[in-house]
Image (cartoon, rainbow, N blue to C red; front, top):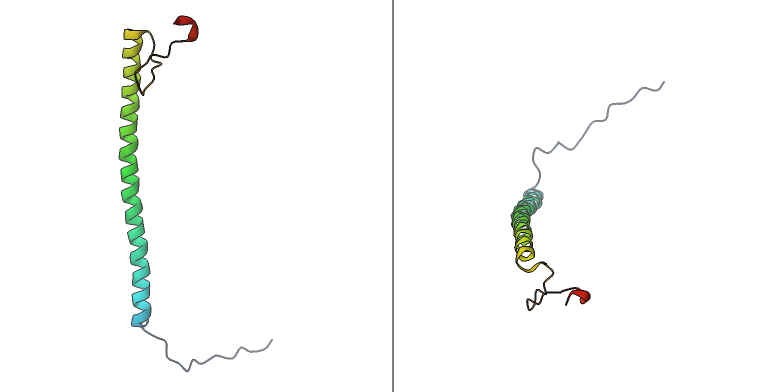
Amino acid sequence: MAKKEKVVELKPKAEKISEEHLKELQDLVNGINGAHFKIGRIEADKHSTLHDLAIMQNKVTLMQDTLNKEYGTHDINIADGTINWPKDEK
């Protein structure tokens, strides 16, 4: 088996990266952090909007119950308020 020779480094190891590389790295990390923050804000808005949607859907269900009691149906033309009676019930 051949002996491995020890490699001697002639160039000293750097203690720090260059200012240019540091700035570029910091900009990238800040960009990633900004994107994460923006996604979090969007998700919070999404959650709030989904909550509002659920409330409105519940109100529609309650309104349909009211319309059924008052008019016997909740099949209404939303544009003009016309009741969409089946053809044989007009």
